Length: 111
Image 1 (cartoon, rainbow, N blue to C red):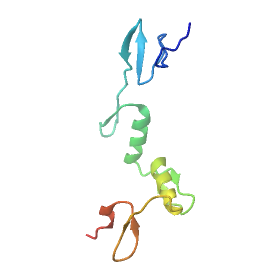
Image 2: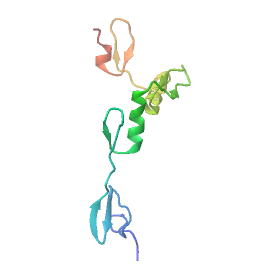
Image 3: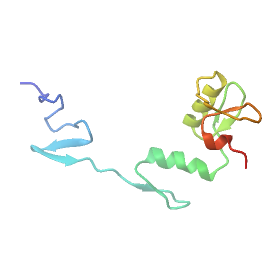
């Protein structure tokens, strides 16, 4: 007897794809524990997102670009920035005045 159903999901009471689990043959949704920021009260779906948010309240920037040294609060923002050094970030909008490229049109517009 296989533990896998036709759809390839576990059907023996173990976690299923899509956040569902079976409980005595009935599907039930996984409950998320919402957590709030003790500084501003903003609520997040999990501790990971809460901790990432808490950096916005401090001046801490733990992630540094290994190319230019620019520092970031979030690793994903730093990773995107690092790609800008090797040209892998697309910049299709070119300023007509200075020739600099931008990834978004609104960044190209002069005030």
